[in-house]
Length: 206
Image 1: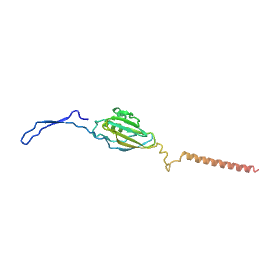
Image 2 (image 1 turned 180 degrees about the horizontal axis):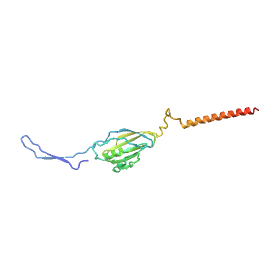
Image 3 (image 1 turned 30 degrees about the horizontal axis):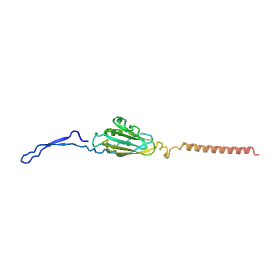
Image 4 (image 1 turned 90 degrees about the vertical axis):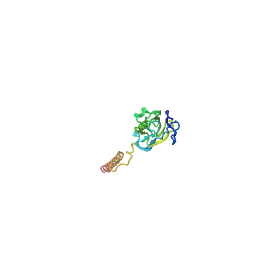
């Protein structure tokens, strides 16, 4: 928007003979053309475990215009929930979601507040599917939303470690031990019955 108070300067024209024109006044209005926000880490990666909250990576958000115009922000996730830094929530205005355990949130705030909210936020996956957290920002807030950063989420199942191949020196599974003892028990019973019937035949040949 145009500044309410214009700037101005006065000037005159003179020649080599010393003649000078009357003074004139020129007024100037400066129109602010917002520069687009910048994310120094616009293509990050987050490794996390199923149902375990993991801190969001630092995105390095900067507004070249300074902390002046409000940003409109949209955050989305497909297979999990995003929560922002609780200490910054009261300085944001939400139109969708509330900044806590949301898969979609829309809010406005100053660039410094938005950066602080995301810096202290975290992501919690609800499935083992890999996910993408997308950050859209409109600067100023009445402009069109533009995709600014994407965080690629790689989810590791919490039980994946138990499904990994056993170490050379690790103990065999309980099921294998019990199966072995069952085979030994059957063999003992079989041999015992054979010995019993053989002795019985010797004692009672007819």
